[in-house]
Image (cartoon, rainbow, N blue to C red; front, side, top):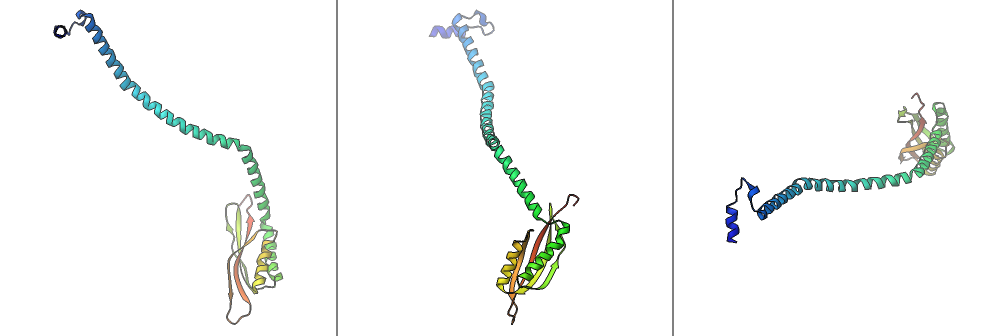
Length: 196
Protein backbone atom coordinates (compact mmCIF):
# COMPACT_ATOMS: atom_id res chain seq x y z
CA UNK A 1 0.00 0.00 0.00
CA UNK A 2 2.91 2.27 0.85
CA UNK A 3 4.35 1.48 -2.56
CA UNK A 4 1.22 2.63 -4.30
CA UNK A 5 1.13 5.89 -2.37
CA UNK A 6 4.78 6.58 -3.20
CA UNK A 7 4.15 5.82 -6.86
CA UNK A 8 1.18 8.22 -6.86
CA UNK A 9 3.30 10.96 -5.35
CA UNK A 10 5.97 10.46 -8.03
CA UNK A 11 3.48 10.74 -10.93
CA UNK A 12 4.09 13.67 -13.24
CA UNK A 13 0.69 15.39 -13.75
CA UNK A 14 2.01 17.08 -16.90
CA UNK A 15 2.87 13.80 -18.58
CA UNK A 16 0.18 11.15 -17.83
CA UNK A 17 1.44 9.06 -20.80
CA UNK A 18 4.41 7.92 -18.68
CA UNK A 19 2.24 6.74 -15.80
CA UNK A 20 1.97 3.03 -15.07
CA UNK A 21 -0.91 1.26 -16.88
CA UNK A 22 -3.13 0.76 -13.77
CA UNK A 23 -3.04 4.53 -13.06
CA UNK A 24 -3.76 5.40 -16.68
CA UNK A 25 -6.75 3.00 -16.68
CA UNK A 26 -7.94 4.43 -13.34
CA UNK A 27 -7.66 7.99 -14.68
CA UNK A 28 -9.55 7.01 -17.86
CA UNK A 29 -12.29 5.36 -15.80
CA UNK A 30 -12.52 8.41 -13.54
CA UNK A 31 -12.79 10.78 -16.53
CA UNK A 32 -15.34 8.48 -18.18
CA UNK A 33 -17.41 8.29 -15.00
CA UNK A 34 -17.32 12.10 -14.77
CA UNK A 35 -18.44 12.43 -18.38
CA UNK A 36 -21.25 9.93 -17.88
CA UNK A 37 -22.39 11.69 -14.71
CA UNK A 38 -22.26 15.12 -16.40
CA UNK A 39 -24.18 13.82 -19.44
CA UNK A 40 -26.76 12.19 -17.24
CA UNK A 41 -27.11 15.22 -14.98
CA UNK A 42 -27.21 17.96 -17.61
CA UNK A 43 -28.64 16.26 -20.68
CA UNK A 44 -30.83 13.45 -19.38
CA UNK A 45 -32.47 15.50 -16.60
CA UNK A 46 -33.75 17.90 -19.27
CA UNK A 47 -34.93 14.90 -21.25
CA UNK A 48 -36.73 13.54 -18.17
CA UNK A 49 -38.48 16.87 -17.64
CA UNK A 50 -39.50 16.93 -21.29
CA UNK A 51 -40.74 13.33 -21.01
CA UNK A 52 -42.86 14.06 -17.92
CA UNK A 53 -44.35 17.11 -19.66
CA UNK A 54 -45.15 15.06 -22.74
CA UNK A 55 -46.74 12.31 -20.62
CA UNK A 56 -48.99 14.92 -18.97
CA UNK A 57 -49.79 16.37 -22.39
CA UNK A 58 -50.59 12.88 -23.67
CA UNK A 59 -53.18 12.43 -20.90
CA UNK A 60 -54.78 15.77 -21.80
CA UNK A 61 -54.84 14.88 -25.49
CA UNK A 62 -56.33 11.44 -24.75
CA UNK A 63 -59.14 13.08 -22.77
CA UNK A 64 -59.76 15.58 -25.54
CA UNK A 65 -59.73 12.79 -28.11
CA UNK A 66 -62.26 10.76 -26.12
CA UNK A 67 -64.59 13.78 -25.81
CA UNK A 68 -64.35 14.47 -29.53
CA UNK A 69 -64.85 10.80 -30.33
CA UNK A 70 -68.04 10.72 -28.26
CA UNK A 71 -69.27 13.88 -29.97
CA UNK A 72 -68.46 12.51 -33.41
CA UNK A 73 -70.18 9.22 -32.57
CA UNK A 74 -73.32 11.21 -31.71
CA UNK A 75 -73.01 13.51 -34.72
CA UNK A 76 -75.80 11.87 -36.72
CA UNK A 77 -78.16 11.98 -33.75
CA UNK A 78 -77.23 15.62 -33.14
CA UNK A 79 -77.84 16.47 -36.81
CA UNK A 80 -81.26 14.80 -36.62
CA UNK A 81 -82.01 16.68 -33.42
CA UNK A 82 -80.92 19.94 -35.04
CA UNK A 83 -83.22 19.35 -38.02
CA UNK A 84 -86.07 18.57 -35.65
CA UNK A 85 -85.38 21.75 -33.67
CA UNK A 86 -85.25 23.84 -36.86
CA UNK A 87 -88.56 22.37 -37.96
CA UNK A 88 -90.08 23.02 -34.53
CA UNK A 89 -88.70 26.56 -34.59
CA UNK A 90 -90.23 27.10 -38.03
CA UNK A 91 -93.58 25.82 -36.74
CA UNK A 92 -93.38 28.25 -33.82
CA UNK A 93 -92.48 31.13 -36.13
CA UNK A 94 -95.53 30.32 -38.23
CA UNK A 95 -97.63 30.71 -35.07
CA UNK A 96 -96.42 34.28 -34.76
CA UNK A 97 -98.65 36.63 -36.71
CA UNK A 98 -97.19 38.95 -39.31
CA UNK A 99 -97.85 42.69 -39.36
CA UNK A 100 -101.13 42.33 -41.29
CA UNK A 101 -102.52 39.69 -38.90
CA UNK A 102 -101.99 41.76 -35.72
CA UNK A 103 -105.27 43.68 -36.06
CA UNK A 104 -107.21 40.43 -36.39
CA UNK A 105 -105.41 38.98 -33.39
CA UNK A 106 -106.31 42.02 -31.27
CA UNK A 107 -109.95 41.50 -32.28
CA UNK A 108 -109.64 37.80 -31.33
CA UNK A 109 -108.33 38.76 -27.87
CA UNK A 110 -111.23 41.15 -27.24
CA UNK A 111 -113.77 38.65 -28.62
CA UNK A 112 -112.38 35.96 -26.31
CA UNK A 113 -112.98 38.24 -23.32
CA UNK A 114 -116.49 39.17 -24.43
CA UNK A 115 -117.42 35.52 -25.09
CA UNK A 116 -116.22 34.65 -21.56
CA UNK A 117 -118.76 37.19 -20.22
CA UNK A 118 -116.25 39.84 -19.17
CA UNK A 119 -116.83 43.58 -19.37
CA UNK A 120 -113.83 45.53 -20.67
CA UNK A 121 -112.88 48.67 -18.78
CA UNK A 122 -109.52 49.06 -20.55
CA UNK A 123 -108.17 47.52 -23.76
CA UNK A 124 -105.07 49.43 -24.83
CA UNK A 125 -102.40 48.06 -27.21
CA UNK A 126 -98.95 49.39 -26.29
CA UNK A 127 -95.93 50.13 -28.48
CA UNK A 128 -94.13 47.18 -30.03
CA UNK A 129 -90.99 45.94 -28.27
CA UNK A 130 -88.56 44.48 -30.85
CA UNK A 131 -86.37 41.51 -29.88
CA UNK A 132 -83.93 39.35 -31.87
CA UNK A 133 -86.26 37.74 -34.42
CA UNK A 134 -89.67 38.75 -33.12
CA UNK A 135 -91.46 41.75 -31.64
CA UNK A 136 -93.63 41.75 -28.50
CA UNK A 137 -96.91 43.61 -28.61
CA UNK A 138 -98.27 44.17 -25.09
CA UNK A 139 -101.94 44.93 -24.59
CA UNK A 140 -103.02 46.44 -21.25
CA UNK A 141 -106.34 44.94 -20.19
CA UNK A 142 -108.68 45.66 -17.29
CA UNK A 143 -111.86 43.60 -17.18
CA UNK A 144 -114.56 42.95 -14.62
CA UNK A 145 -116.39 39.71 -14.06
CA UNK A 146 -116.30 36.56 -11.95
CA UNK A 147 -113.30 34.43 -11.11
CA UNK A 148 -114.54 31.65 -13.42
CA UNK A 149 -114.99 34.10 -16.29
CA UNK A 150 -111.36 35.18 -15.82
CA UNK A 151 -110.29 31.54 -16.02
CA UNK A 152 -112.36 31.02 -19.17
CA UNK A 153 -110.80 34.15 -20.71
CA UNK A 154 -107.20 33.11 -19.98
CA UNK A 155 -107.95 29.57 -21.19
CA UNK A 156 -109.48 31.01 -24.39
CA UNK A 157 -106.33 33.11 -24.98
CA UNK A 158 -104.20 29.97 -24.70
CA UNK A 159 -106.35 28.26 -27.33
CA UNK A 160 -106.02 30.99 -29.94
CA UNK A 161 -104.20 29.87 -33.11
CA UNK A 162 -101.51 32.51 -32.49
CA UNK A 163 -99.32 32.78 -29.40
CA UNK A 164 -100.77 35.03 -26.70
CA UNK A 165 -99.45 34.98 -23.12
CA UNK A 166 -100.74 36.75 -20.03
CA UNK A 167 -98.48 38.64 -17.63
CA UNK A 168 -98.77 40.79 -14.51
CA UNK A 169 -102.21 39.46 -13.54
CA UNK A 170 -103.82 41.26 -10.61
CA UNK A 171 -107.32 40.42 -9.37
CA UNK A 172 -109.08 42.71 -6.90
CA UNK A 173 -112.55 43.30 -5.57
CA UNK A 174 -113.59 46.91 -5.38
CA UNK A 175 -115.27 47.90 -2.13
CA UNK A 176 -118.99 47.32 -2.30
CA UNK A 177 -118.73 45.77 -5.80
CA UNK A 178 -120.00 42.30 -6.57
CA UNK A 179 -117.70 41.62 -9.54
CA UNK A 180 -113.95 41.24 -9.44
CA UNK A 181 -111.59 43.37 -11.49
CA UNK A 182 -108.63 41.82 -13.26
CA UNK A 183 -105.74 43.86 -14.61
CA UNK A 184 -103.28 42.07 -16.86
CA UNK A 185 -101.02 42.43 -19.83
CA UNK A 186 -101.81 40.18 -22.79
CA UNK A 187 -98.60 39.73 -24.76
CA UNK A 188 -98.71 38.72 -28.38
CA UNK A 189 -95.71 38.24 -30.61
CA UNK A 190 -95.00 39.07 -34.22
CA UNK A 191 -92.31 37.58 -36.42
CA UNK A 192 -89.96 40.24 -37.75
CA UNK A 193 -89.47 40.31 -41.49
CA UNK A 194 -86.09 40.08 -43.22
CA UNK A 195 -85.89 43.87 -43.62
CA UNK A 196 -86.57 44.47 -39.93
